[in-house]
Image 1 (spheres, rainbow, N blue to C red):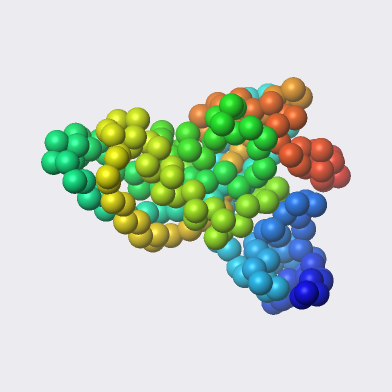
Image 2 (image 1 turned 180 degrees about the vertical axis):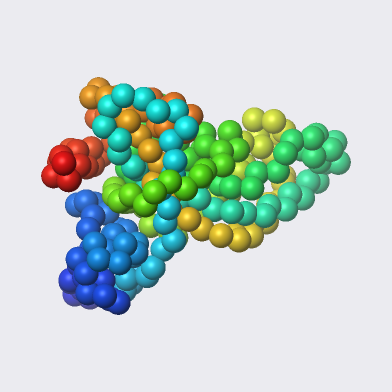
Length: 212
């Protein structure tokens, strides 16, 4: 049996401390502000941005992570009628995948799937720490095709379709959420999530209080 490696939470470039929550796989360097993911006993740099809220609310502002994939998708249909129906719908340019742990996303609604369906376009705000990324890049990629198929299937039966996807760009976005106690509301679409459904809400709140 292979012995697990123990990596010091230090930036491999500047030796600054890497910050994250207990279940995180992506960490932010305190010194250079770069985000790094633990992949096969190495720290790999990930592009990250903080999103600007468009629906301000009361409550404490938190930023929860979401992977965004800029994609090209090629759909090949066996049924010409379905192909014609599918062409009426705008292509999806960005696929979003929730990167924080959300209990029972099927019941509450998966934010990544909803953002994808709504064709959300994010704008960058001033840099802000992004914590709570418990889903790594490779794991997130596995959700791209299911998200696209789920959305298309609500419009056209996808039985027998072949889907080819090319990823052009990947960004880890910090989505603004307003913590109002019992619930969190995102600052992009105003979606509500019960605070208890976010696995790391306790450590995230504690870290946020420590900044104040």
